Amino acid sequence: MALPPAAGAPAVPFAAQPRGHGLRRPAPPGATLRLGPLFWPWEKVKVGPLSVSPMGFGTWAWGNQLLWGYQESMDSELQECFNLAMKNGINLFDTADSYGTGKLNGQSERLLGRFIREFEGPIKSPDDVVIATKFAAYPWRLTSGQFVGACKSSLERLQLDRLGIGQLHWSTANYAPLQERALWDGLVEMYDKGLVRAVGVSNYGPKQLLKIHSYLASKGVPLSSAQVQFSLLSMGDEQMELKTVCDSLGIRVIAYSPLGLGMLTGKYDASNLPKGPRSVLFRQILPGLESLLSCLRRIAEKKGKTMSQVAINWCICKGAIPIPGVKTVRHVEENLGALGWRLSPAEISDLESAAMAAPKKMIQNVFQTA
Ligand SMILES: NC(=O)c1ccc[n+]([C@@H]2O[C@H](COP(=O)([O-])OP(=O)(O)OC[C@H]3O[C@@H](n4cnc5c(N)ncnc54)[C@H](OP(=O)(O)O)[C@@H]3O)[C@@H](O)[C@H]2O)c1
Image (tube, rainbow, N blue to C red; front, side, top):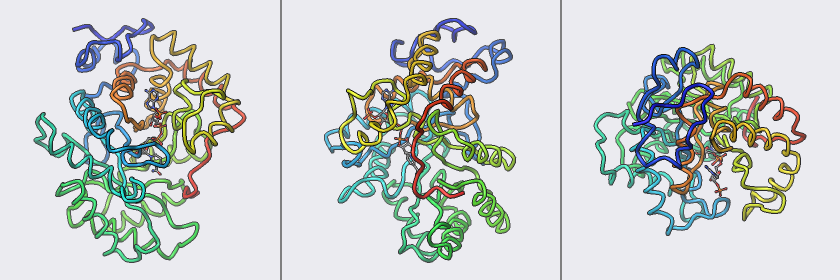
């Protein structure tokens, strides 16, 4: 089996490697010393008490017809995605109880549940597959008991007794501050009842994060993760401040939309837009991204990587766990190649200068708080 590439040497993209090869071998000690951790999928990082791969996969598309064009005929390929990820050491999968449009609500959790049950490899310990689901702060979830009920429904769809990370999908602080305490109490109750191994939040800004962190701490519940939109198109002061607060409190940042919904993959431009509502957003943002995309391309070519792999690796270099959304085997194969190497400080700085110069960034989630 080939050793990982030495510093500066061109690496072979995962998609070009024989399946199952090249990703299982940890970095040799010399390379670790020179470059810092290389983050192979089998070298786990801690999220509270959990040990997870340095990258997870997102499953928003699994059941979403409106934005992502999901059809049930895609399920066998989605199952292949899950199996391939698991066989290559990826053990973190992000989902939500609101994923799945219309009648398909909950489909992402249901599919994950089926894929876990049918997985041909061994699943012996809880760390073998870590499901991070998100509970929506729907206006009708007004009591802690209703929030715990939401957790039990997710467990049913996932066919699990216990979740890896139970995350509050968003804060209601901006529009229904009185509701929020009940949701926080719900998180405490699910943790105390052993329904979740760790508790996390999503779309929380640094100020609100400090509040929930200290509330949970007063109840003896550690806050383990904070999921936020974090990418070369979403690396403003808010994200950086959140990262600093998280680092100081031992909370792991999970980076969602690390590929800017696909804009950082390099496959779209003004004359080639994705189908559906994404095209409206892409039409606004893509025309200003020439220099960022050409910087990504230049670095990718130099390193023998793809633009997606570089964009994902940037998140890892910033200390976050990226969860790129995948819906084809090709996505999984290529994104696995974001692991096992790292960008140099000069490359990171070039990418960030190009990103900061871009006239338009990703729009922030409407539920994001300060
Ligand atoms: N907490 C929250 O509020 C929140 C919000 C958003 C997302 N999330 C989570 O974060 C995950 C990831 O974010 P995201 O799905 O919004 O965006 P993303 O990861 O930035 O982009 C995913 C999309 O990029 C394309 N893609 C992925 N890998 C590719 C590759 N190697 N080559 C070419 N194209 C590739 C695919 O779409 P196409 O092939 O169709 O272009 C894919 O669906 C979600 O699945 C979800 O679990 C959480």
